[in-house]
Amino acid sequence: MTRIALDPFVADLDGESARLRAAGPLAEVELPGGVHCYAVTHHAEARQLLTDSRVVKDINVWNAWQRGEIPMDWPLIGLANPGRSMLTVDGADHRRLRTLVAQALTVKRVERLRAGIEALTTASLDRLAALPKGEQVDLKAEFAYPLPMNVISELMGVDSTDHPRLKELFEKFFSTQTPPEEVPQMMADLGALFAKIVDGKRENPGDDLTSALIAASENGDQLTDEEIVNTLQLIIAAGHETTISLIVNAVVALQTHPEQRKQVLSGEVPWENVIEETLRWNTPTSHVLIRFATEDVEVGDKVLPKGEALIVSFGALGRDEAQHGPTAGDFDITRSPNRHIAFGHGPHVCPGAALSRLEAGVALPALYERFPELELAVPASELRNKPIVTQNDLHDLPVELG
Image (cartoon, rainbow, N blue to C red):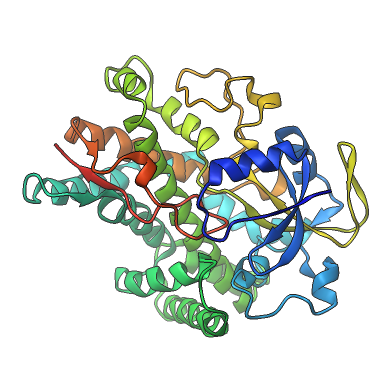
């Protein structure tokens, strides 16, 4: 099996995803830093593995981890070993940790957040409208970032004064370019910041999910301080990064497909279709780290060996022709059916999927209603990916609002 090295600079994600798909449903890959693992790259096989109890989240199953081959200053250590939370356990422990979060993020409960999301969106658009006419705007920084960060912070009870420090630390957390000597301190700083937030909520509880997790631990649900801190960090990280990319990628797709933009702006095609097709075609999450095989697992005509690590390459899955047909490589908001798994599948499916869809479903139509003549300020070919192996993320999105 030929090993495919994932580009730490993410210069050509589409080309890399195509090479992964061509390698078969199970590809042998090398993560930045020289760490070997396998990637599932086809839709059907990913659904199979994401529900296979022989593929687990316990890092102690990983042969390379047991042999001491994964250094603690590896830039991706925070994604491979983020501490104990619902992301890193299975079975009964996973259900125990996930229950409160899932209950807070049901479709019905998320819908109650709509009015607040609409107000935040309007405020962001008002700030954009107040800028000098003709000025180039970074739509990611000025619009796509503030909305999900404010929404998830309000849900979790995180004060806005912590946002600048969170942004700085998460930039390092996700980047493959963080110098190894800075990784341990960055991880310690993130842990300390979230521990401070949890301590504050313990002293002054509010109507937020962090306070609910603390109350549950005090009422006999046996959540440890580590589990609460790590759950908060997980939800904040996943709850804003994915939605930022979804909004940004949808704008780029519409701006580079003017006929389809016309269809959605005229009401001929619903915004829901834009969101689902963006999730499939230019998914916010390119690769998810990391699962481990407790025994040899057959994947098509190949084998994921016992003790080896597996990543899920969502960027490759979304354009799998076996699932989405011969036009899988095309952006098409009229595609039906559109059965992607951009938010995962099985027990660890993203509990925040409904919230991300709602935020994008409010933000995108409001943006184009306010600025129907919006244009990219540079050709799409000049937009730059950030050096993040797990997130399909741009450095910035320069636009002219019109």
